[in-house]
Image (cartoon, rainbow over all chains, first blue to last red):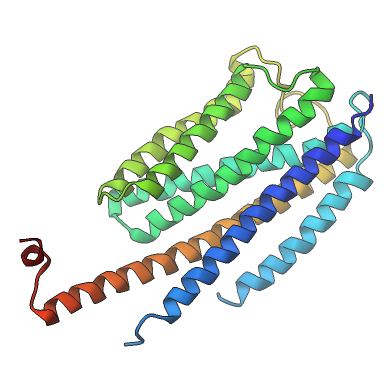
Length: 42
Length: 237
């Protein structure tokens, strides 16, 4: 039974999902940080 | 605390590389299923982490309902979002493991169906948070979170209560696991729990920052209205 491709597909999908989510978090953080910096200081 | 996050992120990244190496290379190959059984080292820890995050969501939601704490509400939404990510992984890696072992991608048995329902409940929770502007949204979401959390024990105990295709748990279910496999499994379980906590913490920080920006802007708008002599009620008229 050649099941190795299913193993790689599973591991790849895990890291693609985490990669996409971490990228979303980083972009969201950068946007909010810009918004915070543009707020008046007082 | 600001310094702790990048340090913890770096440590978690190294641990994830090490635990993946252990899962793919060091853990022995299972006799019946072969190499595809190694999906187990990601599938089960992802399910565990999703369950933990939904439990955090439950605690934060209950706390919000009693104390109306905005930080608890921010934690609830952060835990739900991160939990959905891990639950998505469970729903993708499960069929990829099932196909070569069972010969099917999916079956409507109790464990699989209740996991899908759990995912749908928390996706609806996030959609409610995303698209509802009502002041009552956090309360409605907290109530929905309590009902969603009721599905978590149903998912876990479904393999005892119902006849299912899904195997019994390796720990506490009467099954046995090679000690080397158990070591790698427990390592991945700990590292995934840490990874889930880290993602939730990062999301929580962003949520607090976003709320600070929104509150400051709302305050600015009110002050501008006060200085120009028009109240929101007057401007409507």
